[in-house]
Length: 590
Image (cartoon, rainbow, N blue to C red):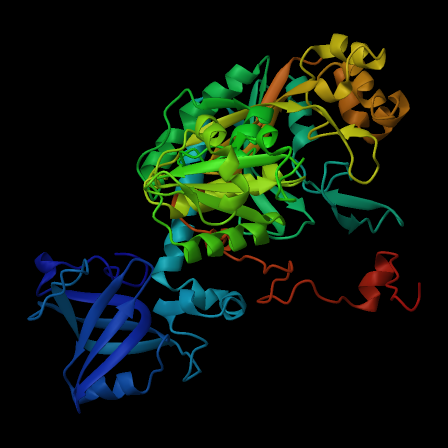
């Protein structure tokens, strides 16, 4: 017996015929056939069971209940005359002897039909998320998430990692995104910050003598939403290892992730170790992205030298990158449509031409490149019936990356979609020139160890090398064109840390002020350590085959970081503001 029922709505089979049972659930649908005859679908968490109403008494009971009310049903199981092989319970039905109303739905009309909620307006789905989650198709994603998290925990513990939770209320730290701040009532004018990641705490655990740490960590960043990023909060499989190198981190991830992807994924094929490793600059040059989708066989070629004297202004003297797509049967209209889509995504106009079946260049910008035919054949390996898409200018790399993914997915034979292809992106630049400052800044994670350690930083300080050539022992894990995580070998030496920060105009006092606990801890002898943090939400999104991350989060915010179901963010009372020593001002007050 389960709670107040004998069986779930997915449990009854032919062997239960003749049994007296009690079921509970939501009344999903009623189909009346006669004055005292109707079919009722009862749904619970586990599945559905068909009820057959055959008496005036039971008909009266059903007619007084709105759909989506919760009911209790007692009756006898019998074999169905007209079986439904598509349902697990399709060979049986239950004839009710008693129907009890447990929770009335007080509305005759629902915001949307439960089983078709995914077709409804997203605002309605989010506002009535508790109804949306009744849809078995929506619920399946949440169940998948639970199973994946459980599998990750089990795998990490089998690799001798300890699950340790780190603080949610902490100090603000410059980690690349905006903090969510929490006012401290007992400390007027001061604020806690919700952690963007447990970065410093997990490194402190390594200095504390814990060898292998992990947690399914909540992270909070005040950043805009997009398809693969939820605003506000997200979860990651955070891990760190002491006395470890990049190779140690790779070995754990390559052992843990492929079996989970193969077992729980929409596709049952996942890359086997070792995953392919691609240098950051090579990824940009070859795929136009540091998040390549290796299911696509297209690559980019730099053909700038061929067009230094081109008659076409967009190409002449610019960076020009091209992608050759063999055996492409897209029409001119389809090509133009896809290029428009690429322009919207990349912000840069793309161009095209074809080598037709007769071996001649035609279409698009062919008249401007026909004089380079032989050189293009040699550079791109052109053959008859090959489409060439071209990107030029400052955004050529980004544009060609979008083209590869867009045309690869739409040109038959160039994408093996039904698999999970992992790769490591390695050798990230340690520094970059900031777009706004125009000065040297950290490119990614300031806690990463520079490849070459202190020696390479000293050379940059002396002007012997360009600091932009310094790479970091940092790595990204990419799957099917989605960045799952970033990680690094950490900078655990205070001397190296200070020198790394000095190159971006921050001295020892700045490091001590911004990262006091970590700096001081490292002064007491820190082990070399490394870690990574694959995103749980993105992982489950890939496994479920969803395009939007909101489909795999139980209660997601909308694109504007609002919880329209709960009404958050919301105003608070003046008393609450006074207790926190906060005054809310308007633009007029400023």
